[in-house]
Amino acid sequence: MQSPRAKIDISIHDQRLTLKRGDEIVRSYPISSSRFGIGAEEGSNKTPTGSFRVAAKIGHGMPVGTIFQGRVPLKPDDPLPASEDLITSRILWLDGLDEHNANTRDRFIYIHGTKHEDKIGRPDSHGCIRMRNADVIELFDLVDEETPVVIEE
Image (cartoon, rainbow, N blue to C red; front, side, top):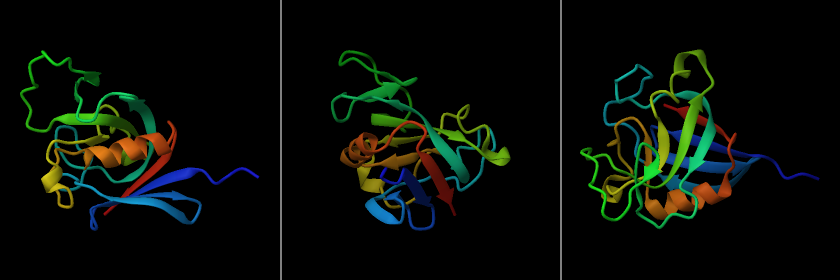
């Protein structure tokens, strides 16, 4: 018998990401959603809600804390991006499956690591779901592309 498919549930209210297989909770992690609130408007820096899928997994095998720019890992001598919202360690690129969040992939909404681990547990991102680097690496290894994701208020 095949094991139940993995599913990611994210609660904005609780600032938690829960990985489930069927009804079983496999892992639960603190996260940081957008400091600008909830929404799917282009350029809003808000975290969208609804149904999603993991469209791409980026960063397999990269060292903890690797910084990505445009989904490409920076080399040690590359200049740092101008953004304070660095994307580190791993990227799970989300694709919105609902009419209201269909622009999610074009908005570059990810689940990713951060250098702001001290702010995990409260809204602080620019729209993405931030995780501690060790947590996002563990999650990355536990899910596949196409894994369903639900983000709820």
